[in-house]
Amino acid sequence: MKNRTGLDIRIAKGVPLAVVALAALATTAFPSARAADLTAAEQCDREAGSEFDLTRNRAFPAVATQDIRIGIALSACREAYNQNGGARTQFQLARVLDRAGQKLQSQRVLAEAAKNGHALAMVGYGEVLAERGETEAAVSLYQRAAAQGNILAARYLAATPRDGVATNVDDEVASQWLARADTDRLPR
Image (cartoon, rainbow, N blue to C red):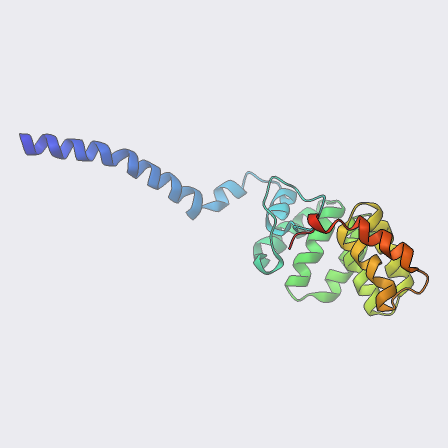
């Protein structure tokens, strides 16, 4: 009888631990159950939100480029895009397409996001234009993005005269852009 009581107590103590273990397993082993509750745009935010994007959905942690799960992110972001997703969705789709090696599609969607006013897309598309030799258009995009508070754009503008990219930006203007860049806020 004494052994039976001890066994009952051990079983009773083990049941709550088993319930907790099963609950933890259900949330990690079956993430699609939680994903089903999200809209396509929210799934795209969760899978492709950039740490540098000031408009990123803060309900989800930022995703480093190398950590983008291409299949899931591409599916979610394409669906959100097809549902008339806004500039942030366009930017995130472009980011995923680029990560997937679909450079031309990425640049097309990135240009669309930049045209629709997404600051980080303006920076990214500005880089594309600068590589093509379209420096004036690139600088224009950097200026628009920096005016929205984008630190990366401000840094590009500060470096343009030094790098010989834009000859119409003088040292004083470059210093002002560098001061606006507020390097403490730039993720490292």
